[in-house]
Image 1: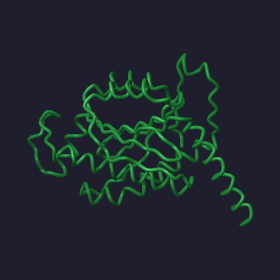
Image 2 (image 1 turned 90 degrees about the vertical axis):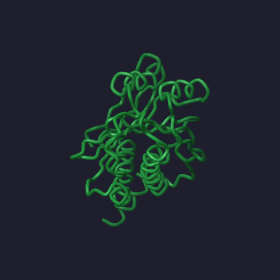
Image 3 (image 1 turned 180 degrees about the vertical axis):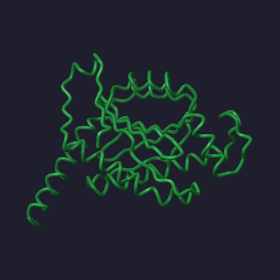
Image 4 (image 1 turned 120 degrees about the vertical axis):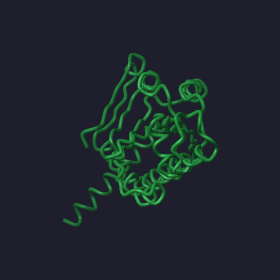
Length: 225
């Protein structure tokens, strides 16, 4: 569990943000469990035997993430999902251009895709279904482990990711830090980025639930021993 990063900038560090290590470890395990549970569906979908892992979990200001996207992912394909219930916010998932082309080519066999401009509705829907698989696995894992009552909207394509992120920050009361996790398909070196923009103290609610779940599991382990 070495790949956990917490970053802050001048605006975010003005507020006291406590991210307790046990709860963060629990969240990491939940996200990894979701990735592991998606493997069977992804293998059927992609026609491959490759694994998928949680490569990195980060907590960072939205402004830092936007600059990182502009620098490292200037050309990408992005999708948006909303989530609501006991916790609320938005999720943006995106692929770099080369990874999006590889995945669609592997599934369709169409070797004529050279850039995202060549993508048609079928190509877009293929990656939308992949996003759906990963999101549902994460939803199921967090629901089971933290007993949340929450739900997603279906994924829709976002044409300008950085603009959409900036708009979300202006319209919604977002938490100070966003949650970023990167999925990696080893061997293929495919990286899938997922940004969770929590609103209305969602991070606080999440940490509280994880604290309760951690305490419950530790108590159960103590009784068994």
